[in-house]
Image (cartoon, rainbow, N blue to C red):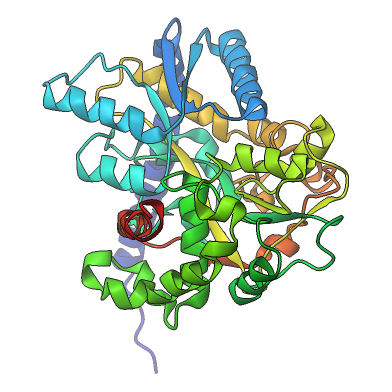
Length: 410
């Protein structure tokens, strides 16, 4: 026979449970009131948003965000257009070295990967887990998308707010390519048989370095080595398949490997001009956008490799010395809101996939995402389902230095 539980114990347990739920409710209201206070404090502030400025469609979207922030919160958004995010990171680091702990020049920065890792390591970020407290963060689901909590294998710890998803996508012009190669090995064979028709952006351009990581991952006997810091691995052995692959294709690259496109937009233009048969980008809608704008012919289509392609999440972060920290966090919340995410996902606006979990959205917003029209060269979510995880950010410098030494300086 089971022993009876004493009534005093049950009463105590009930009191504890009631206290727990009351505390939870109180904390929820505290966060809501806290954000309401934040929006009041943000009024009249100017946010200097340091973000890459190389895409007209992205620039136009950020312009729309600025209009919305002004109307809703009286926040002025200034897009500081970067050619490389490291420019802003270096500026913030210089301010810290100079002892400038407030009134910094950067209020919000578009960041991920190596730049986030270096900013976190050097103490350049706001560190109070502010991103987890944003009201719009409740629409995300870290179980469905773990990358919102781990940026290139580095825990975010609430120091950056997710903004969008990216996956490396290849494009080809069907006038010149009947069946695109769907592996690193097949691609090397195609390049050798069609000299001068393939290239990639010159590292340290983000897309160019990502392409090298893609090939390294595909050819690696054990991909897990790239998930650990490079200093903990036999770097030469891990990257030997990549160097061998590049040695094979080097003579047959566009312009004999003497020069490379500056970035993916340059490469897309070369695809449109017919100089190249392939291009690559981290935006799945990039090539549909190019067709719509007249940069690319209607014969262009996109694809990914059979084993998958690199995929990651990009974020926005608030520097430790931001001048308008309140308005920067309100801006981050709006960027993560369903309204802003729906607009950003539209192929005719930007085509950047959402980081929100559709099952956590109201029904009308779920329908807005699922009924969204795709361009002629945009892959479906099912087709994009095959992904490869980003290596630890420490591999970036190792790969770029090795490539420079072996190929750029020839």
